[in-house]
Every structure is written in structure tokens, then in C-alpha cells.
Length: 183
Image (cartoon, rainbow, N blue to C red; front, side, top):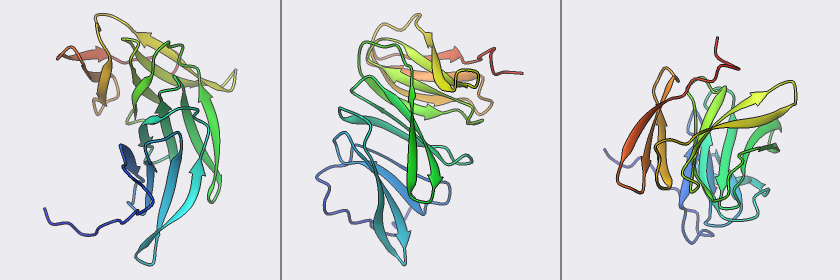
């Protein structure tokens, strides 16, 4: 596949995690620190529009919800945030209660964008959803039979199952239904 365009971000030494929005006109990256930089394509060039700064340690995962336009981030500080764009170029963070004692490694929205999963170094997968009565994001843990850090996750298109790859050289599939939000 030919390269359409090269995005030159000279100020970044390396970019370990990144994600595009739905129409590929905006890009969220972490320049290997605790920040997430959001760029927009304007007239064929990429301009920094916002810097998201809630994490206290390195950002390890980013995912951009295609329909709701929310950014999900997780980091080595054991936290995850859901960022909602209140006004153009203004993002409001919402802390996710993960209840883990090691780094959050990767994060991925479900196809429905009503829930997401976070792979962790705590040998658990956090299935997270929004609890309207308390106005926050909470998590339920998938613990068994994971015996090592969860490095990658992906959703089944139906949103009812999740595949996880871990550092014990195993890939596992789990049910990902959450009775509080599933109908």
C-alpha cells in the first residue's frame, strides 16, 4: 500500500502510542511522556490544537471513539481517563476507577462505545462502563485465568467478547457482557 502522506512531528523523539479520529483529520499521540497531543490537519499541514495533561506518568494507550468523539487514555500511573470535547479544542477529563496496583498498559473502546477494556500489568482486564447515577466510569475485573501482564486487547464486532494477548505467550477470549448496561 503506497504512503499517501508523511506527518512530520519534529518535536517528538519517539511516538509509542497514537490514534486517529474517524475521518483521519485529527491525530492523538503521546510523545513518550505523560502528555497526549492532539493534532489537526489544516491545509495539508498538521497543527497542534490541544495538549491533554492529566496523567502523572507515561501514557501507554490511546483510543479514539469514532462516533462519540471521546478519547480514552491509560498510563503507567495506573489511571485511565475518558476525554470529552466540550468545545472545539477544549477537552474535559473524566477519571476511570480501575482499582489496579500496576500500570495500565493498553485500552480499547467497544464497538458500541458504551464500554471499554483496559489491559493491565496487574494480571487483570478492566471492563469499564459509565455509571450515570454516580457520574463516573467504573470497572469490573476479568481475573481468571490470566497469569501475566495483558499487552493487547481487541473486541469482537458484537461487543460481547474480548480477545487478550499477554506476556505468558497466550491469547485468551473472554465474555465481556456487563449486565448493568446490556439490554
